[in-house]
Amino acid sequence: MRMHSSQGGAHALPGERGVAALWPAKSTELVGESRVLRALPRVELRRVGPFVFCDHFGPAPSVREVMDVPAHPHVGLQTVTYLFSGSIRHRDSVGSVQDIHPGDVNWMTAGRGIVHAEEVHTGPDAPPLHGVQTWVALPREHRNTEPAFTHTPASELPLWERPGARVRVIAGRLGDAESPVSTFHPLTYLDVELSAGADVSLPVDPSHALALYVAQGQVSVGGKSVDRGVLAHLDEGTPSLPLQSQQGARLLVLGGLPLPDPLVIWWNFVVDSVAEGRARFADWEAGRFPSLAP
Image 1: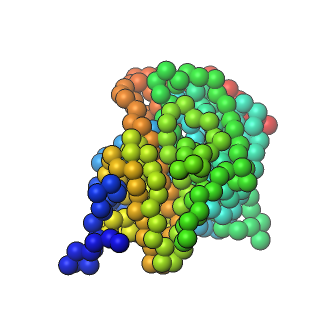
Image 2: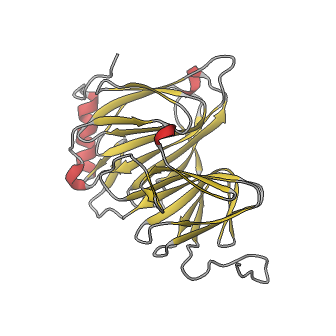
Image 3: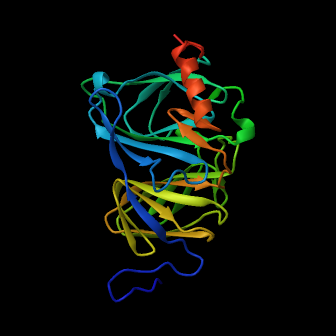
């Protein structure tokens, strides 16, 4: 049982994570007329563990002219596209052509340099596009690794289930449930579905810096309410994440062991310095990146 204050809120108990800060995602132009909610990076919070970027898109009609993302490069990071509804076709310069469906994990390692594009599936009966793209910074010693792409279907991801809660382990682990997705750095990435009236505690790694982002509904963390479109930066050092929801919610928990500096996010790159970022941008403009798969 949790103790409630006279104001009607609640405080995280010893050993439980509370909310350190709440940061509403900012509406940001993506391509064409489309806009996304950008939760990371921001002036107040540059990264959470190795996660340096988080864009929330939709739900919105699948309109090809608006939502397609043309070919663009990445360096020094991994992109993770995760859908709640709709579908996207991924293409990249290592030859991958892959359709992404809800619950699948597309984990692209840019390493020393990769190019990719995303095409939204459309049609009169197409479900609304809704999902999140995150970027995971590579540790410095792996930033020039060989570019690669892996696709893990939803059926291969483990589920951690308790009354009122269903958690898909996208990467990392939750209790005894461990994702098959390989990473270069210890991290946590969870898709959490809460039913109305849910009250559950997730057994998280106490060494990981964590945040949660609410994609649908509302959740309470140690009595602090977190609404849709808000990133909650969590306290560190405790092994239990208490979650409650009166109306139900869909949220992502993300983070991991902090990465040491130097780490600079410059355009689509994770590099050691702004000068290095500018040099890689010059490479892109000069056509020195690999070509996109046909």
